[in-house]
Each structure stands twice: as structure tokens, then as C-alpha cells.
Length: 346
Image (cartoon, rainbow, N blue to C red):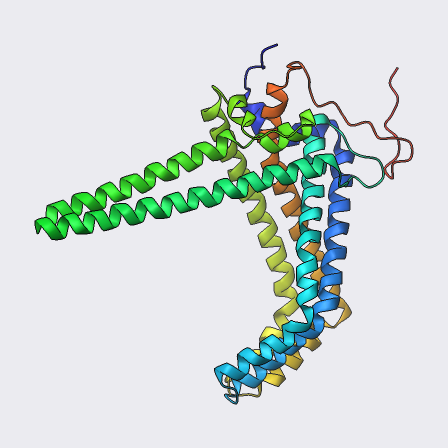
């Protein structure tokens, strides 16, 4: 069977189409993601709070000019040294959480599937996604190194040619050539990024590791996918701007009394005064509620933008599936799901 034609509008609006078919599924994944990230952040803050306090105290002491550079470095190592094990543990935990969240959204966007109860898992899908993301990292490192090498070779070559000829025109031509080579390399990286963008979604939809297969899946639709990603990026910037304005208004109202108190200070006061004022400002119930609301608004916007960005590759994975007529139907929620069972038909 052949893949369906690429519908640009459907690709751009794929996330919203899925949202319209099954809003409860998206809301539940978003809620669980907020809870997961919130719990991990709260645990990290609780464990690292002594280190934060130590850094504030170090800044206050250093502001008085009583510490030299070696002493500052030594005290920083003393502050963060006890938490080295926590930092090492946080890396695999963070990777597992990220992969679980990515897989949950891709299941929703490519198969219309929301796992019962907690939508996050760590199994075959997530392990395969780890492989895909490792391949992305390898390609990114190779691409970055390629750009650096091309720029250095072209620049050094141009400088040598200009020095040897003593002709400013040769030097200018070499610089122009170097710029063009870098732009061409950047263009090649962009092509690779778009051509391989469907790999995570194809991996989840087909249940097998997919990476270079994404190159074939974008055959003949590269420019449409590029336009779709640009359009989604613009929408994400709009969402980001709205979220940014809302959070800034919340934080401005929250810290306005602190700003008014600090404004008349000349900068010669004891830094401990500023530190104590800051702690007092963020310790009130109103401040805590405001910070929580700002976090929820900010991260809810982040969740929406992540899902939107995944949606273009997800649409192409569905379009390219062997079952070319397949669509993402509304997810079926079991009777034991926290949001309730999906309604019966007929």
C-alpha cells in the first residue's frame, strides 16, 4: 500500500486534531506529567536546599570582599561535594522520566493510545526511543564538528591564500567562500534534521526501532514538512509569549513589595540583609501560592509546546504507515481509568 498524500494543514494542526478527538487523554497525560515533574523538582529542591543556602551565604561573604578565588572554589566544592551521588543518580532518573513522557505523547499522537492509570511506562518503547535519541546526539555531534571543521579549514585556507598572494581581493573571496561553505553545511544539517524527524514517532507507532527509515518516510514531502515545522514553531512562539506574559505578571505582583524595599538601597548594605529579605518574601503563603501558580502556568505551556513539536513527525509516521488509511481514533479509556471509561457507541 502507498502512503497517503501529505496534507499540510493536517500536519500543522495534528496536535489540535488529536486534542479535539480525545481531550481527556491529553489532559490526563499533561496532569501526570505535571505531577511527575513537580514531585521530582520538589524532591530535588528538598535535597539540594542546604546547598542553595550555602551558595547564598557564600555570595554574601564574597560580596564583602573577604574571600579570595581559591577560597571561593574550595567552599563551592565543599558545598556541592556531599551531593555528588545525588547528581549522578539524577542523570539516569531524568533520562527515564524524559523517555517515558516522550513515549506517552507519541503513543497519543500516533496511535491514539493512553495507557490506563498512569500513562508513563519504561519498557520496550522507551528503550527503543533511547536508541533513537542516542542516534540524534551522535548526528548532532558529528554535524557540529563538521561545521567547526569546515569553518576552520575555509578560514585558515583563506588567510593563507590571502597572505601568500598579498591580494586583499583573494582574502575577501576566501572569506566569502568560507561563509558559503558554513551556510551549505548548516543547510545540510537542516535537511538531516527534517528527514530524520519522524524516527521517534515511527518507532512508537510501528513498535520497532526506526531511524534511517525516517529518511524514506519523508521522500517527496521534505518541503511540506519543513513548512509545517516552521508554522508549528511560530505557534509555539505565540504560546510561549502568552505564557511568559502571564508568569511575569504573577511574579511581578509577587515580588513588587521586595523590589520597592530594595530600590532605595545604595548597594553598600550588608548582603545578608538582602538575603534575609528575599527569604522572607518567598516564605509567605501568598508567595508560595504565587510561585506554584507561575510554575503550573509555565510548565503547562511547556507541555503543550512539546506535544505540538512532536505532532508533525507523528502525522508523517501515520501517513507513511503500511496501513495508509489508518487514523488516530479517540483513545479508549478503560473503566479503571482515573478519568472514567470511554463512552460506548450504539
